[in-house]
Structure formats: structure tokens, C-alpha cells
Length: 431
Image (cartoon, rainbow, N blue to C red; front, side, top):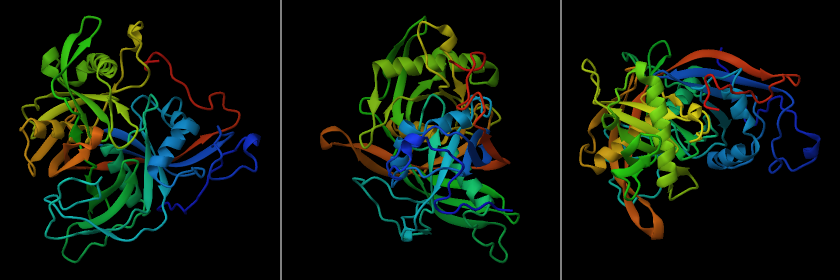
């Protein structure tokens, strides 16, 4: 039976007495006395995405960007409850889904992937011959990851959210036409980075087997190619590329470290990846020109595809699950994205384009450490405004992949629970 979420649906969250009678739009969301969240768990190409579709309180903010900032400051306990033990684990992600007020129907330029979406004002725009119509955003989502990371956009999370909403009927699937094997549903989701236009294909069973999203612009930071980073404790000099694809990525050719991207090397991939990323943060910090987003906050190792693979390249994205301390080797760790990473693929494609190694319209199949794949494609050249009003080159990319629902559940927390915000333990967590 599909779940439905009414606009403004609130869960069993107890506000403290300090907030009684306060303005509903500005009062902080206090740590709850009890919680009951309606959840659809998914995975996209192996990486989990926990999609919360009910039980949330009213969160101030007129956009997902505003709600993201508010949750980070006043309601980070949701992230801890959903991601940390005993309800979560180091590789878990979560997305809080919010219903939106109706908007006018939008149209957007078509491209070779037949999907489009609004972007920050570009410096160049080529009008397409046709304009497919996307239903306006009925839902938005805020993404939450470990180490208090709240991405502006995440590819695998967006694919998971889209699949969960479609397969439970919260967003209606387009009807299957006579003689067709699949149906195409066009719609929009609002991420903190902005509106994301989506094309989803479903089969006769109503299973969504392909989700194609058009990301916000990806670009290399000015001077961000082949940046030298001195990594302490014997690692030495490592050359990195700095690019934004929805998060700030530190991109490293694994061959520099004689590192093979295979599951059995997982601990070493995490150790070196987290060390390189933190050293890069300290020596070459970056900030997005349009909003307050610092980096790099994530890193990706690049390598050749497996011999039997149809992919063009392989990668392993390392994410934080704690805070690294150079004085504590036990904290030199993280976790590996099980998927090929959607925004990481966008950042990698942006660097390949900047180096003249990937053309507009050329498909790019990216494999994960597990061998699962996303297909990316650069569909448009554009620009973003950097310091002093200068425009720097950027590209718009599409990413396609598939997600699966793994369980329907309710995540609850009783007032008597001794771990109201969960916990981490040094055996499998960085700190």
C-alpha cells in the first residue's frame, strides 16, 4: 500500500518548554523527547540512502537550502539518530523529504539525454529544438551524511529519493502506453543546490529501472588542476584536482600511490584518502562562489576499469565518519562509497573536460569499487561567477543509475532511551 505524506505532516516530536508559545517559523526545533519517523530505505548501486517521508516537525525555511542550514544548526540530532548506532552504521546516508507548495509547470531544454533543469544563470546557453515538460517540484529533500556533512546535492541520494517516491505512489508514475514495455515519468525535486529535473523509466510491474538526473553546474576550482599537497606521516607529495560536482572533491590518481582500487584494499584506501583530503583542506581550502559551502569535504581515487568491465574508469570515494587528528593514527580512516558516486562522477567529468579528455555529449560510464556503474554525460557548457564577478568555465552533467527499496520501516526513539542521539564506537568509527 503506497504511503502518502500530507503537506505539513508532523511527527511525534516533543518541543521543550522553553519554546512553548514561540513563533512556529523561527523557534528552534529542540532535541525531541520521542520520535517516530516513517522511512523508506534504499540503495543505489550499493550505497544506502535512508529516505524519511513522514514524522518530521515543521522546519523553518522557504527553500531546501534554508531548511538545510536550519537543520545543521538546530536539528542535527535527526542526522545522529538516523545515521549513528544503534539505528545506523558508518556508510548510512539519510534524506529528509518535505512536501512543497504547488508551482507552475516548467519546461526546460532537451539534450542528448532528454532531461533538463534550471541552473544558476549561465554565460552561454544553446536553445534546444524541443522543450520537454517537467512537473513542478512537489517534494524537496535535505541530505545528511556523517561528520555533520550536509551536501548541496548527492547523485545516489537523489536517485534513491526519486525511486522511493515513485514506487510508493507519492509521485504518480506515468501510465504505460499500449504496446510499450516501459513508461517515462518526468518530474522535479528540489535539492539544497536547486531544482533537479528527473526522468525515470519504469516497467510493467511499476519498478523504476533507470533514473536520470540533471545536476547543477560542475566546475574545476580556479588553479585547481594538478595541485601539490604535502601529506604528513610518510605519505609525501600527492597531486590532486579540486572540482565541485555537488560537493567539493579532492580527486587523486590512485597510481601515484600504487594503490589498487579493490575491496580487499578498503582499509588502506580509507586511510590514505582521509589523510590526503584533510591535508588538502588545510593547505588548499576552497569555497563555492554562490553559497557558503567549504571544501574539499570529500575525495575520490581514480583508476582504470577492470578488464572485463564496460566502464571507462573506476573510482573509490572516501567519506568521513569522524574527525581526523594527526596525533591519533586511529582516526586516519573513513568509509568508501559503495556506489560510483553521482556528484563525484560529475566532478571527475568536469576535470576530464577541463583537460580536454572528455567531450560534450560523450558518455562516461563510471564503475564503483564493487563494479556497479552510473552513466554520466556532459550536456552543456556554461559558466559560474567567481570572485570579482569573473566567470569561470563550467559544465552541466546528467547522471543515470538505478536504486532499489530495501525496507519500509519506522525509526523510533523513546524518551527513556539512554542514547537519544545515538553513539559511535572506535572499533568501526573514526571517533
